[in-house]
Image (tube, rainbow, N blue to C red):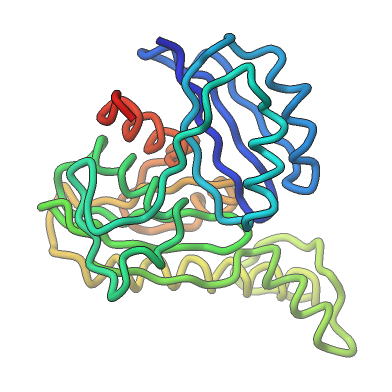
Length: 243
């Protein structure tokens, strides 16, 4: 049976069509254009089962539901919980965890049975520890690279929205801003990783739109995963076929 996964984020809506074995199509559109899913979905297999997560608010969720219309069954929305799909949630209030982080942790559990750091590099960067027993132990949220750049341009009088390059010794303002933002991302990830149990199997799973910008600067074992959130949504749907 074909499955369609939808990840509604703050900046983009990512989607993928899965035939039960592999991805057969994937794409993305701006969250501000959620209504255009009605046109995009015209190319999806009819009556496919849809599983989704949303951190962009109820209005976006409603727009997605309307855009999909009656051609598909009502989406199965993943909500954060105390435990599911072999992952347990140690958050003080499990339901307050972002659904995209929860989906990424479910996806990570399908890839790793050892301690791992699950990093989502998007509008915000999240850095989450999933231990070997499947417990989400906690994690970090920090502004993503572009959000850091934008905040400097917005809240300072003389700093631009920098389009510089990374340098170990930046010698102009644009490079200094870009390099500082990347150092902040990498530093948070590597510092969190240093607290995980020492093992040759421990690694970082890195996903999200800015993952390719962070990856070259990491000095820890890592694996790039194209879209761990979509992978987690498919794993959730497969393990809950009756819902």
